[in-house]
Amino acid sequence: MRKVVAAINMTLDGFCDHTAGVPDEEIHQHYTELLNEGDAILYGRITYQLMDYWQTFLKNPSGEKSMDDFARAIDKIPKIVFSHTLKNVEWESAKLANRGIEEEVLELKQQPGRDILVGSRSLIIQLMKLHLIDEYQLCIHPVVAGSGLPLFENINDRTILKLLKTKTFSGGAVTLYYMPTIEKTTNR
Image 1 (tube, rainbow, N blue to C red):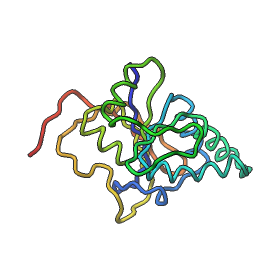
Image 2: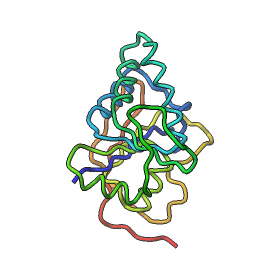
Image 3: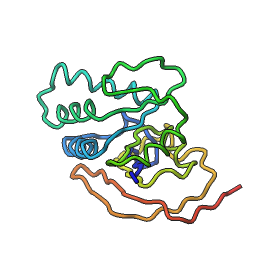
Image 4: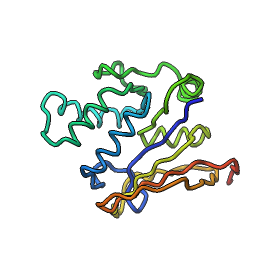
């Protein structure tokens, strides 16, 4: 059974904002390796459209190896996009999900292969509520944003996570690898 891995960048104060982090060569390399180890990545509409930025590096490489490598990795990995408004996707390696997230992910998990990555805040929240995330990889950047979209918003269930390992980057970011434990209780 394949694992569902929620991988996302966050600020120290818990906000998910792609403009608040401090990505550097080392972090781009880390995410390139993660993408190369996965079989698919799940996106919501907003994140999918933000990631479209990387297609420009395919046509006009930046000359910075880590960014160009990331662009190739994000282009290559199959993308499944969950959207109620998009009618089609431009990226050749992307397709629109034709089922709900629970049904789609349960079927993907049963297939042989490598990890299924989740890179959208909204999908991570939905999958967390469905208890379908097998591992969290939270890259915490040494930035206090002060405001933004919190990752763990509107979560009603208490989920206890077990720390598996950490990875520290020279720029001060830290990736925390967690797996949910079996104990889940509902807070009402």
